[in-house]
Length: 110
Image (cartoon, rainbow, N blue to C red; front, top):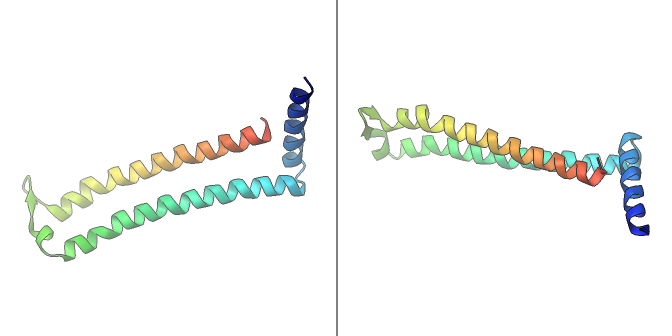
């Protein structure tokens, strides 16, 4: 029973640390911001590498002349493959960002 009371006291204290913007609360918030920034940079890097690889692929020569369903491959990749990549990156980012926020809320005891 004593451990359960201590755990509840810790959650209230952590929540008040964040609400009162003490040094501990600032460290917790900075940790959340750092986690969100790291996530954004990683997802952004995947998108930049995915879309940045297309000009190199087109410069290779042979893929630029291929036709699929009567459409040249560069146009098909730019028109059909880029948007699912962007959608998937956005969906993944939102899901992982919400998970970071849930972890923060669990830590704060809300």
